[in-house]
Length: 324
Image (tube, rainbow, N blue to C red):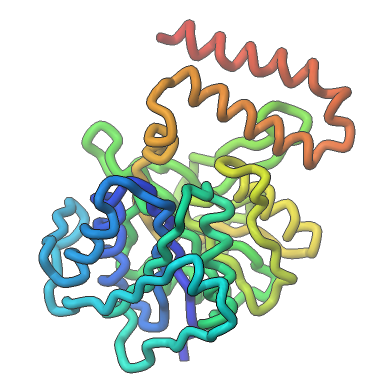
C-alpha cells in the first residue's frame, strides 16, 4: 500500500496560481494523499474562487495539462483558527478518493511562509497521521508521476530525510525545459550562506536518479515524518531560508537531503517575493535581512564575519547594478 502523503500549499492573494497547482495535483497517479491548502488571510477573493473551483465552476487553463471535470465537485472542508485550536479531532473523509477532497485552513492574518506551513503541519500530524509531509508552492505545476517517483525513492533509502524534485522554470523565454533548481549547497563563510545547484548533465549518469545536496528548495520539499525527530520550520525567519535551516538541523540528526531527478515540477520563480513587495530595492533589503538572520543562527562566529558579509553584499549588488 502507498504511504500517505500530506501535501501543504500556502496561498496569499494568488488564487489563479493556486487553482492551476491544485488541478495539476488532482491529476497525479499517486493515490494516497491529502491536500491541505492554507490561506494566509487573502483579500483577493481567494476563498470564493477556491469554492467555485471545487464546485466545478472554474475551468482551469494551463499549457501543462487539460482540465478534467470528472473529479468535480471536490468536497471542500474549511477550518478556522478556533476550530484548529480546539481539542476535537477532525474526522478524515475516508469515503472519497484523494483527488476529490480538499481541506482549507483559513488564517486570520498573514503568518508568513514558516508559521503558515507549521499550522498545517500540526493539523496533519494531529488528524491525518501521514508518513510524509510535502510542502509545495502554490505557483507550481506538477508532473503526473512526480509524487510516485519521490515516494519510491524515499521508501528505498532509510537515511533520506528530505527529498525534492527536479524543478524547471514554468516559462523561460517560451521554454519549459530549463532547470531552475536541483537543491543547493551551504557555505556559511560566504554571504548569503547558500547557493543553488542548477546544472545537471545526463540524469541517467546518476545512481538511482538521485543527487545528494545540502538543502532542498521549499518550493517543493518532502519530509519523511515517520523516521525523523521532527523539526518545524523556523518561524523567526518568516519568509526566506526556512528550507535551508530545516535541512541543516536534520543533517545533524544524520538525515540526507536528496533531489530525485526523474520527478519533475515547474515553478513560476519569484512570484511570492514580488507579491510581498513590488519595489525591487525593498525586496533586496528584505532578502538581506533574512539571509543575515539565517547566517547569525548558524555561524558561531557571526559577528567576526559581519564585516566580510557586508563587503560581499556590496559586491553582489554592484554586479547586479552594473549589468542593468
